[in-house]
Image (cartoon, rainbow, N blue to C red; front, side, top):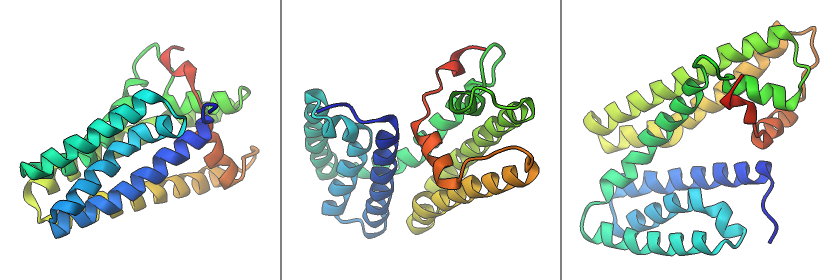
Length: 212
């Protein structure tokens, strides 16, 4: 099978992550072994799903091993850390990805995406895109901190509500709000429609983020 397009890959990862989040919520709040196993398997599918759809043998082998490991983890009573960790590790990684491109000599990630989509991006939007990179790095760092705090000190249901629902709503509202603000602030410049904007972000492959 031919490789998935960057856009299709992004949508598959996003959809599988949302589905896994729902399953993690039920596994954490109901604490039944079967749900815990299913939730762990769903989490394993998120990074491996694209390779499985493309029929990559090592992806299928890794997924099979993950299923076996999920069974053993639950039977040994150690599922909880593996259900909590993704909500902390994933935003931490995203904060690092955005933040690391702000170092001297590198192109901020949002700037790289903007230039990949439209090489002739106006200078004012290039400057704004750097601020957006800072904003996303800060937001994902904040999500990491409050998810970790809730995992350590709050009841399971509180953590699950924030990690598996509220965080997604916050990110979605940020995407939509930023898009509306940008169209208002830079109204004199052409902007893609919202769906086209999401497609551009999903399919972007900003190689320029490694250097200026």
